[in-house]
Amino acid sequence: GSITRDSQFDLLVQCKYTGTSVEALVIDVDVLAPPPPVAGPGPLRVELRLGNGICTAKGCMEEDVAYNSYYLDGEYPVTKVLRDPVYVEVRMLERTDPNLVLTLGRCWATSNPNPLSLPQWDLLVDGCPYRDDRYLTNLVQVDGSSGLQFPTHYKRFIFKMFTFVASGSANPTKNVLQDPIMTPLQEMLYIHCNTAVCQPSPG
Image (cartoon, rainbow, N blue to C red):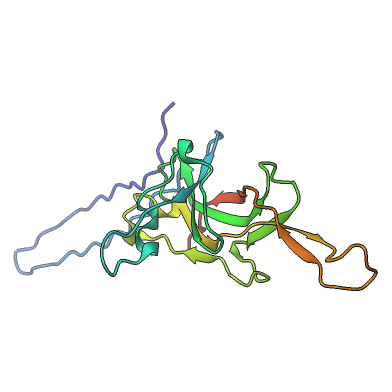
């Protein structure tokens, strides 16, 4: 059958008039807010992509335009210089419920596609920049001013490009304690994020 949960009621008013006075009738109607959408099972698709917008005007801030365009699948792997900013966006796909909020838990980088592989380097921990990194990841606020139809379906952050290193002995033929040599591996970086989708509780 069909059902509804919209607020509805009938108010019956009976008026009696007398010829000697004027009466006022004031009615205050409180309308209940519509109920939240009904949850249903189904796939939830989340995409991670890199922004590549470039400033073309004098005085332009690169962070303001970085998320205006994105690298296409055929443009990967993307070459970056160490300490170059990397503009990351995580977004929810195929959802139109404005009450849904995408959240990031942990985001990290590995040197191969397996998210469990080692070495790893944290970018975000519990949605916050990893504090043991000298170059803290910057969270980018996504709100109504972004021009996105559903800004709560997006998360953005910026980190400085890095590479993993292999540590080795400075001189393996001598038994003298020395600082280890850090050799850049110059491998590809793969970015991973744990995500969750929630609905804010009323109040």
